[in-house]
Image (cartoon, rainbow, N blue to C red):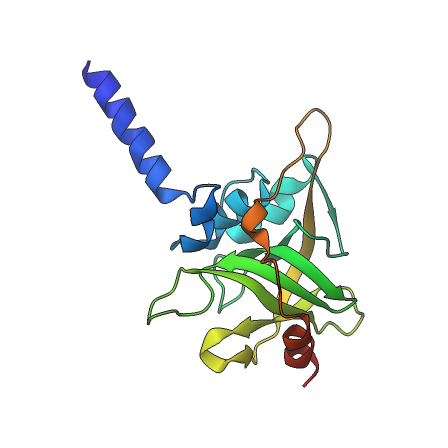
Length: 185
């Protein structure tokens, strides 16, 4: 009986710490990793910057953004654990929208989910190895350029099941014009 109570308590803690794949996905407040896992369906665990290596041999990886893919930010002084975000829309060759958590402050706190946020490729070789991200506090692209490893796609290799992105990944009416204005002003 005691073991059953401990197991039930552990399951409740896990359930509360990970976002549900439901309409409440965008109500999530917490770290980017559990959010990206729920939003993309890609089942990788660990700090965000470790996702790139952990995907090797399990999921396809590449340098081209696709809706539902996870972009993996490298670890830096500003991002000691890295960051992961899910591509919600491809706008043009150098501009995408992402849905992610724990980036901008909302109501004075970090951790909130944001949908269809502008992310632009600022790499010199147009390979998405360096990006800038829309930041709510500035109401535009942040001034910092972040290094990335690339994109992890939901297509599993070998015998794994392919990931299914959450239906709340993108809105029904994303602001493409606003994303382009943010990226090119």
